Length: 342
Ligand SMILES: [Zn+2]
Picture (cartoon, rainbow, N blue to C red):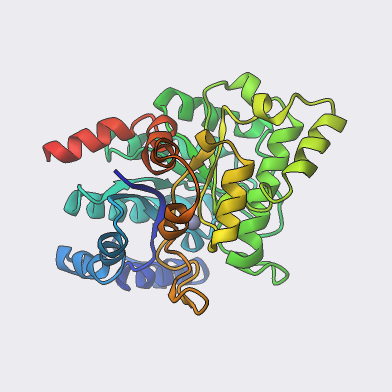
């Protein structure tokens, strides 16, 4: 089985954005607030939105199931208040649940959290619990910078985040560290802000003893781990200078990287530097990089082609495609069994 651990609903029907527009307009003028949280999206619209994109690519590329979450840039935690985020997250997560219910063979849900800058992440516990216990989701996306490029909240290793981590451990769900849109013009969202977020989170983990406090807490750092694998010697050296344990002992029981690196040499480096047990297959399709690489004639985000090309034993490739995801997402096995029964 080939499990893609990183997909977003980037092709949701436009009624979702229309709701968001009204919600944001309502922040300035209460009379423009949406009067209902019913988006008015039919099942057929959802089917159509997926058939032309995510499902088509799953079939063409030969992947089986996508761990699916709301559009990352759309989370926009910096907008409005904690209540704005609460309502918006619930709506986005409910839509993912509808996708997973319509296509139980193809999608398993991961939730957006109702984060808000300066608001302790304990406020996300209710929505996380609802998504896991009521909607059958198996993880969450955690934004290390809800301010959208200004980094105003404490680092991920601060006790500020601990109540949410306690709940993640209790529910046995990992988080993908995932920033949202950038409202800082210095940082292009997917080209700079995303990669900064990934790299920054890893460096934060090096400096502290978070995983001594939470030995079973798990994070996936997407986009191939940002700059981390390329600079692995730097991070090992920094850890050594800081009298931290070797990274393998310090972080690699808890921190994993995905394969959203959009060229073969990048995947070759990732798989050479990072232990195979710490790499999860992912593509982040559809939308982060949409085009076709003129050098290969294939979509940049068709990451399975790169894994298929690398020199590696079949057993190790199975770990990347399936085994590691089953270890990191403690609830995935049950979710997959339920989809067979459905
Ligand atoms: Zn993503």
